[in-house]
Image 1 (tube, rainbow, N blue to C red):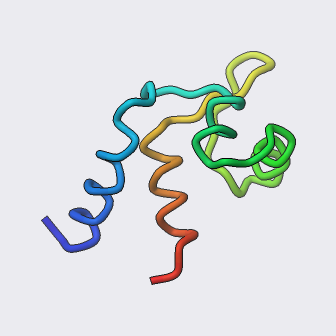
Image 2: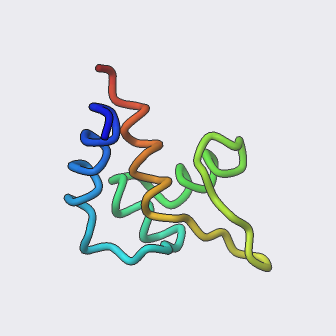
Length: 73
């Protein structure tokens, strides 16, 4: 396991209480952002999401990996 994988696994363990698939409002709570900000980042393609019907769903592991990339080393 690489150092980066180990770092991500450690980060993921802190979010294990969250379901594997999240709604927009759950992502807002997870990232301590407003729902509008999550929607904006999603529309701009900056936040990883999947569209299911009219709603977006977010995979917890992808959100945590995205968050890890936002934090400067």
